[in-house]
Length: 250
Image 1 (cartoon, rainbow, N blue to C red):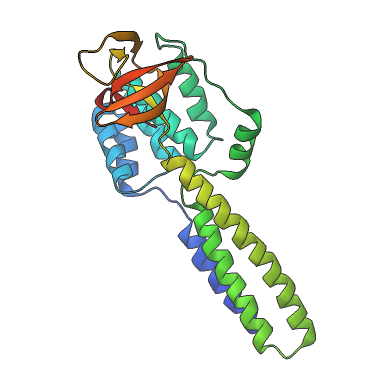
Image 2 (tube, rainbow, N blue to C red; image 1 turned 30 degrees about the vertical axis):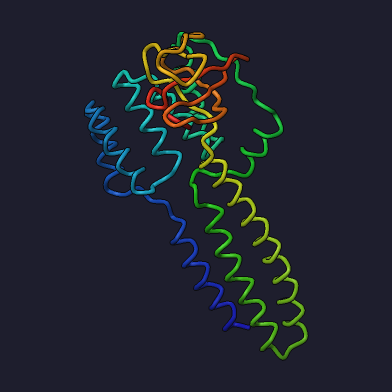
């Protein structure tokens, strides 16, 4: 029994070291640049971290602050939205997003289903791979309990391993499912933020088509479909077409 505890301890140590999301040198450097008011350079460092797949809520939040200080309101709103998409419990990002939205010219109605938001806040964490790590750990522990069940001679140990295997199996199913939906939620780009000071929303995906209405920097829109370099968007019950380069998808 002592041998099995030792194996579990090793597995737990490997797992916890894998999910220790420490701040790396580039992140610290970017934070120092921000403190020294080199906001554009700090933003560039945060962007490079994201390009390297450091997808976590804190990086997006800090990036949003750097954008805001650089007077790039649309990009700041986009970054705060991305931070909350990963971790809906990021209260700092939520507060800054609300503050930034007050400075936009267009007032957009955003439906916010209470049940959906509650579930996201309950299940989604600050790192994109959190539940993926949990699923890996639970699969290792599940495999270990199966091995113990096969090799153990004691009926008591076999019963304990069977119950543990059941629990780890359920955790594996739950964590894998949650990881999948979290990942899909982050990768699905169904909304966008207007980046232009003033963007023309046209009635069809052509440069010469009539302008239906205008939107301004920071406005959040829903993406309906894409036609080459054009996006059909919807906002406050109105729809139209905008060039993809004039928005940033969330």
